[in-house]
Amino acid sequence: MENKIYSINGPVIKVKDSTDFSLLEMVHVGHNHLLGEVISIDKNFTVIQVYESTTGLKINEPVEPSGSLLSCVLGPGIMSNTYDGIQRPLVDIAEKYGSYIDVGSDVQPLNVDKKWDVKIKVKLNEQIVGGQIYATCQETVLIEHRMMFSPLLSGKIVDVKEDGQYKIHDVIMKVQDDNGIVHDITLIQKWPIRKPRPIKARKPLNRPLATGQRVIDTMFPIAKGGCAAIPGGFGSGKTMTQHQIAKWCDADIIVYVGCGERGNEMTQVLEEFSELIDPKSNRPLLDRTVLIANTSNMPVAAREASIYTGITLAEYYRDMGYDVAVMADSTSRWAEALREISGRLEEMPAEEGFPAYLPSRISQFYERAGSTETLSGNDGSVTIIGAVSPQGGDFSEPVTQNTKRFVRCFWALDKSLAYARHYPAINWNSSYSEYIDDLSKWYGDNVAYDFMTLRNEMVKTLHEENDLNEIVKLIGSDILPDDQKLTMEIAKCIRVGFLQQNAYHADDTYVPFEKQYKMMKIIFYLYTEAKKLIIKKIPTRLIVETGIFDRVIKIKYDVPNNNLALLDAYFNEIDQTLLKVE
Image (cartoon, rainbow, N blue to C red):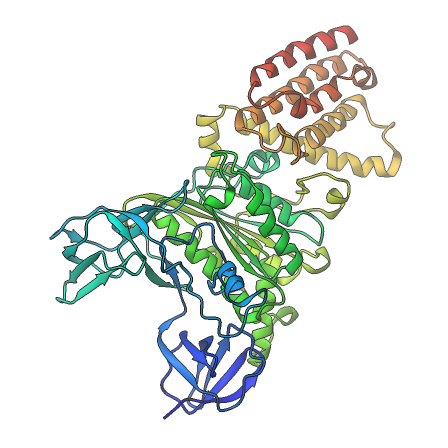
């Protein structure tokens, strides 16, 4: 019996009295073969969410099961590509259909005609296990693509080709499994997007993801394989912060997921990424970047799938032994897609109309991050940095609060800082990182033994300033004793000279750990020496009038990253300047 559409409610359709479908199966809906996924089955109805526009769809059009789960096609050609939420290449669609995506657009995720220069890594009669690398090719100038045997198979190689030029669907190897069945192995494999890829073991998170952004690397670091949230209201700099991290962080590969953002903003992102030069290799950043663009006017169900598509691609490259950073912008739009679909399904709403399973969905996403030993024996990691867009900048709303439960790093953006042109606009009083203890040893071994001590002093000073500001608002700063006035001046040095960073300045857009450490060291050397003068009853006003605080603030501009030896002269300058006051 042919399965037919019984009802249509936006992206949700129902098929009546059918036993042909299985849960989460991918299906083709209507005469245009729209892509859909089975999300609910009961004795009367099969409910399907459609990942394309259902405009024009009619009752009684056919629905065909595919027998497989909604999956990503994994193989060479992913890197440098731009996909929509269900891995359709937007550039290829534009060439074939024009500026708008037609329903039922049948475009392959990877180029089937391109030949890759493949080097075979296995031999005839060799035993091969799941996750083992059997071939490699140069996907871009920066990335070597390592083809891995399916994690679900193992067996004996009964036929294998020589090194040479092959298309992605060419059979380069035949493997006989333990049941005697022979499998044809090509350059690609498929993997269900909602299922995490298997690993050999999880590793401790004890290496930081270096971003070159001082407020992150020093104050609120994230570990490689960790999770961070960037919540902030409109205009507070979420996308800009993610851009800086994507450009400068020491991940091998960037997966940028634009989930439900405005079309013009997403266009700007795509154009900027295509123009960015990777500072480490002097090559286009796109050589090691995958973009997934699912704008707010695209079908809502595909937006819900987009972050799973992004994390699946990230896990695939992690399994090759790469460190991958996923930028999800924004998970609030993804949660809104969940809410809309839940409403169509007439499910009981929870807080603010979001479905009751919102926390579990958020946790399933962030739990796919991690530092791992892969099945191929390599070390790889997936770091997730998710932007959250609370309405009106209200951090008490459900998406922000539930995200907070599952991430260990929280970079709270402050609209007042952004309006004051203080970027990154990360509020040091409401942000935190729980990776500090895990990373302390790394900082001590690789940067300086007292790095964390200075960092903790900095945090303490900023909290003291915050408390003193309450007094200043009530009775003015003149009433403060000189030691507290000095604390206020040093806190200003930290805020303006250290935490504030200029993305358009050649030496300030990215700052290595060594310079960050020495800047802290100079600030607190000034604090210590100035305190000695305060004890001798010399007013803070006289110390400020020397201009030494302004000199320290300008270190970030005055000392180039390639000549850090200049920093050593500041200790002597502080001594000479304060000697004149004394």
